[in-house]
Image (tube, rainbow, N blue to C red; front, side, top):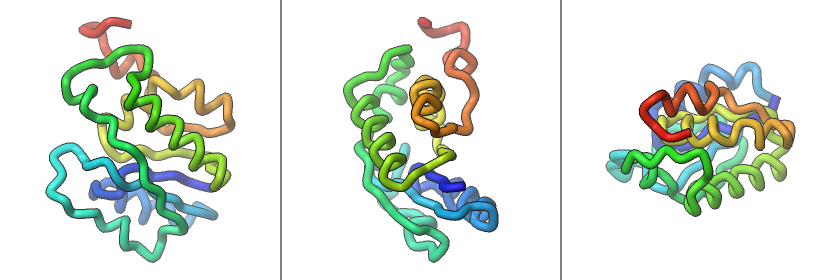
Length: 136
């Protein structure tokens, strides 16, 4: 299994990395675009010997932080997802483990799109995340 773990700035990314390393053939991480509430620390996963490749991705979380949970990708979200698709193609990724809430939401609403490309995102369905208080 080739795994992509997003947002290497987060401690969760390192925990996922350490947990999956024995099972994964390859582990790739994303970095860039400040984490929510980032202090500038680039994360433990960034420097781990267990990482096979690192890729930068654009920031997209402003819409999520502002409470804009639309069914269609915003420009920033679309740029992020296209970059993820490119990384998955280059690295032959099978599974994506997001490590931060905005990414969980974005991968949920793009879950079928990624599945159609042979990539599983380990997230719930988008309607579960959006809940009854948002537009569908």
